Amino acid sequence: MAKKQFKAESRRLLDMMINSIYTHQEIFLRELISNASDAIDKLCFLSLTDDRVGMTREDFFIRLRADEENRTLTVSDNGIGMTAEELEKNLGVIAKSGTRAFRSEQDAGELEKADLDVIGQFGVGFYSAFMVASEVVVISRAYGSEDANRWESRGTDGYTVTPCRKETVGTDVILTLKPDTEEERYSDYLASWKLKELVKKYSDYVRWPIRMDVETTRKIDTGETDENGVPKMDWETVTEEQTVNSMIPLWQRSRREATDEECIAFYRESFHDSEDPVAVIRVNAEGAVSYRCLLFIPARAPYDFYTREYQPGLRLYSNGVMIMDKCPDLLPDCFRFVRGVVDSPDLSLNISREMLQHDRQLKLIANNLEKKIKAELAKVMENDREKYEKFFAAFGTQLKYGVVADYGMRRELLTDLLVYWSADREKLISLKEYAAVMPESQQYIYYAAADSVQRAARLPQTEQVRARGYDILCFDQDVDEFVAEILGTYEGKQLRNVVSQDLGLESDEEKAEAEKAAEANRALLDFVKDKVGDRVHSVRLSNKLKNHAVCLSSEGEITLEMEKYFHTIPGADTGAMKAVRVLELNAEHPAVRKLDRARTEDPERAAAMAMVLLYQAELAAGLLPEDPAAYGDLVCSLF
Image (cartoon, rainbow, N blue to C red; front, side, top):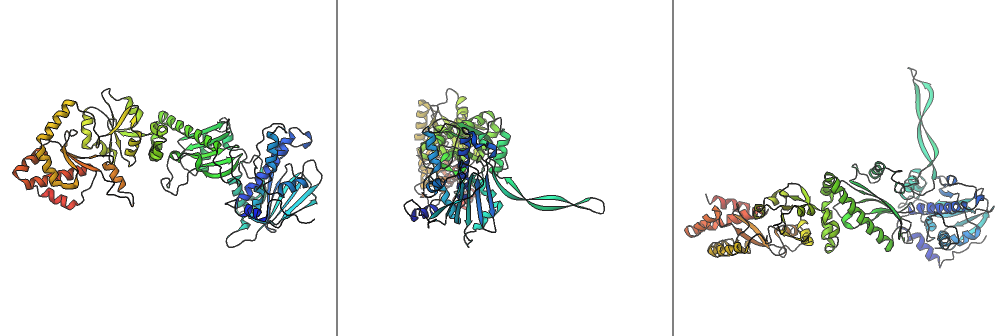
């Protein structure tokens, strides 16, 4: 029979199908298995209304056969098969999908409705075989026909269709693999281990059994005995046909069919974690978009989680066929630690089925999963606090950055998941728990920031708040103050920084007294400012200090802790990102009174005392002296 040319626009289109659409050549096996599954689906569907089919669900299968000697790989099915006309229509016209037409007929009511989820849509998956094959032969016998036909092609040079014989209904796709090159080892696709690996990766949950010959080693009795009469054993390698796919995914089973223990075992094996997850989330959604998912919240962060190399995302399946190993679009970045799988027949995939089109269905799933994850974390926080705190130690930073990201777009989602160290209760508490026990007289939620919660709790500026019996949240991460800025308020209570903001604890009378004291000590304040110079913006009397002599505060939007953070960023403009420093003195403290007396009696000594107090304030704020040796000499000069 004369060779025919493909009916799509040109050889160039076929060349694009083979070389440009798919990013991984191993995808070819997924595509051929998916086509075989669709063919079986159609015949199984037909058997519901046609008794002549004479087959039950248990009779259907897909078989892989590798012939290393002839370099051929065969993918066979006992599905509905194709006539010569259908071979011409489905394989001779690129992007002509028989499955899509079949689905359209079903949707249009031309076929009786049934539980049928076929996979194919575009009609290009078959041509991925040419990525690894120099020649493709398709031998097919359609259901209801005694005749079979052979479709054969070497790619862009066209194809032939000729009659042939086939004993059974179904289709064989025979690939003759390309010769190996320095860059590509096509012969790997003839190895049973490689085929099993690809089936497990992409087609493990295809609903029909995928069978292939697999070499196994077993112990045999040699028929001999040793000197003690013990039978001698040996090992032999045999080839046995095995089903190499799981067929029914765990997430498609009900809670009665798959326990949490089985789900956890699946998680540890699939995602290579030695620890049980904090929570298991199952979703079976129907409606505008149907999908099932099985999600896991890990207990610990992978070693590379907070690096650019970490790749977040959920495994995405469509009818049991893996589309993407990590689909980041199904999770907001704040929940990038979640692992698991999503399986939906309703997603709009691109032509290669390797990527998603960004459509309404995808957004619906992502929005729903976001709410499910939030609800599960809140449940763990309430019911198993120890487990939640372990989770928060691993991923709390991610939640905090989630609050700050996108100008606080997700602050309402995440706020109640945050926990901070309580200076009074000496344990982690949420903002809700803090607000629940606030005295009626307390107007604000107070926090202090340092490089550790212990240091934050002991900052000199906390004295005034603690003296009133008010609790303080201790911040110990760079991002914490940015979170407070984004949140602004919680349940109508403003968050206030004890170091840089007015604490609102003085009456009008107390403020008036403070102004009088500042004016009375103006000479002292001016003297100290003159001696410390530009190292601080201003010097003033403190209304926060009780037992400490001095502290270093800040004014404006950039705090001392923010300054420290900005200075760790490579290339940052450290001059612009600098806190406006304020040196606060406790006029009632003995050290400050001695300084005031020395100001008139021994100005040189007083200047040294002023510098020592500045150094002390910097140390209390977690700032190291620029010249530690000079600081030590200065202290010694006062003895």
